[in-house]
Image 1 (cartoon, protein in one colour):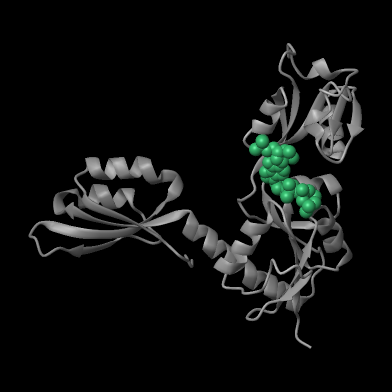
Image 2 (image 1 turned 60 degrees about the vertical axis):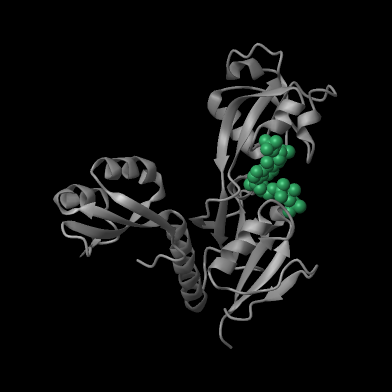
Length: 286
Ligand code: PRT
Ligand code: ZN
């Protein structure tokens, strides 16, 4: 029988939509959101399991699933021996310590002898040990941010994204102890057939991510400025330069990375480029 990859995804939560979208962009079709716990892809040898995120590292470790998508915070907190094979760039958040707004925060030593409520006792415990702080960790599974107002703890350590939950509970963020994003995890020992399917999947994921991080750019340039402009647009190998019907002008086509985008565009315009078109890329194959 030929191999089928089993991939565990969060059933319904903050990771779900982006995870489903990623596979869609990789051209891998499967049904989700039907209430089913399992779905078989119609065009890739993969089977998807829909689970609670906290259970995913364990299922991957036990071999029930070969791959899984979870927040790095969950993967590290559970401490399961799974391999992180790729960072996915979505569901970014941080694990932070927060205290009531009125507290005069002087540094991490402020927590000495205090009670801290969290759902992340391992990550917090490790951080406090590194900082040489002796505090009591009070583990709770949800609604951590209300702990100080009901007298359960003097501080919290919780996931923060926009910061509005802390704000609306009268708390302020004072230390970030961990930064997280969604990651693809794998069972450490995959057989050769499954590993080759993982490689195929990773190739697609990287192509999708590269496309998102780059833009296709087309512009008109006076020939005397071509050297300067093409130096700013190295592209995948080198830019395409073709003459325009108008004497003394060329059309330049290239690819520009999102991170360098605005700075380069300004320099390109200053060098004399005109009619600049910026076009999204669907896939980018190196
Ligand atoms: O039901 P299941 O167990 O599968 O899901 P869950 O409720 O445990 O997890 P879920 O769906 O809330 O989060 C899944 C993953 O998304 C987390 O493990 C993180 O890696 C990531 N993530 C990204 C977040 C957030 N952003 C986030 N904002 N996880 C939780 N939050 C919560 C946080 O706990 C706090 O209550 O949102 C609140 C803070 O948000 P802000 O925007 O007000 O700061
Ligand atoms: Zn969960």
